[in-house]
Image 1 (tube, rainbow, N blue to C red):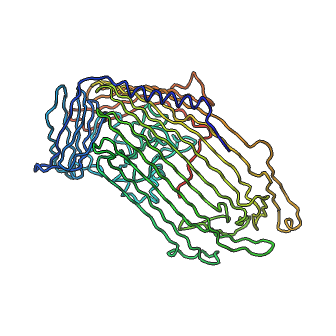
Image 2: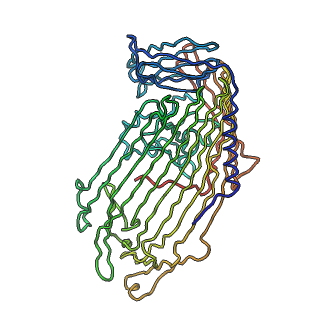
Length: 583
């Protein structure tokens, strides 16, 4: 099936692109200074590759860098205002300095103390801060790359693993709501080693998201770094260590080869332009055992059902200074699976398929199998503009296309004889295509007592197509083997008519949220979100108010009480495509 985006979809994409280029040229000129410093240990020796973060007065991160071989760090073109500089390094306690910039600042000296057992509350050496900020909820399940690398997660499928912590009552009918770098997506867009952090229940009542905290996974991918870093993971399995299946005439030679990795580093001598490359390759040589009774005799053979999966992505980051940054990325994914649907009831202790004969089963012969393929191209764009130390605009969006055909091995009628065999063609031919656009634009305004965020969220704007060619020739079922030999079919299913379907979907969600710091021990968050979808909507009842409060009694603020409430609609994407399951 050939599909082309509808004109209105192209217009919406062009509007966002025009907005993107307009705001990139609209940053006002004002006095700017270079903020430099050095990171040292208690003895005065420099600390190399320490992570240094620049935050505004409300705690929002506007830039980060890494100390060089001399322990030096540099934030160029910083506008006047109040800031917090935080240094982090493995084995040291976090060092934080508050400063006000109104003139060229002096050289900062960040002297980091050695971490103690009591200071290292979380894995990775990052000190836990108990504050009344809405986004600093201690009930958040947070896993950074260090934590993820230590987990015994099969195939590095972090999404499935972390999904066990979600609340089933809050999930959408389409499954887990995945938010990647602030944008709803169908997948992380990078390989596991390029994932920096995964969070659940972060800011659970925020109006910026359509789902509550316990119903969404928030993934942050790695940024480009000024130093060259790389990670490689691999997996190898072989059936030589597996016992032979009792129903196999001979032991199938199965094997699995999996590897993935990522590489990041500078692309320019100034290190203002960096890159992130990630790739993953999975080759699973599975063989399915077929044991069936056919008129010519018993069929007992091993059928190769190989699965091939490749994913590759690349991103380029450029820092314009003053925390203004843009990055553009492209990813490609391809998954092929041959001889699917062969056999009958399948079971395996090693992940491989095998047939277990039993009453009522109709083992599928190799001729009645089918092959599937999934290809997806995606472009990601992120642009952050800091107008001043109070005004920040963050634009993120992605544009993608996927194609998923299913092809039968044989073009013939399907024959089903219960308890004996299934032969002929699979009659499973179909094809799904999609062009989609997801994105959001968020404007942030910060003062010492307010943190205002407003904008528009576009979880989905897409054109989907479906070609259904199943049962075009027909599926014929026979009650017994004798009826099959006599040509007496019990039922016949033949599909006729137009199997082509196309529809365009639009989902929008404007929002506004204000976090009010009544006093250091009391913080309130008030938000409002509007749900709109072109297929299912009710213009008068789609407002979703959100509210949360954080209170820290006493003078030490060691205990924080949190509470909140919100309205969340179960408004899902119509016909939303799902990514093929992990191997």
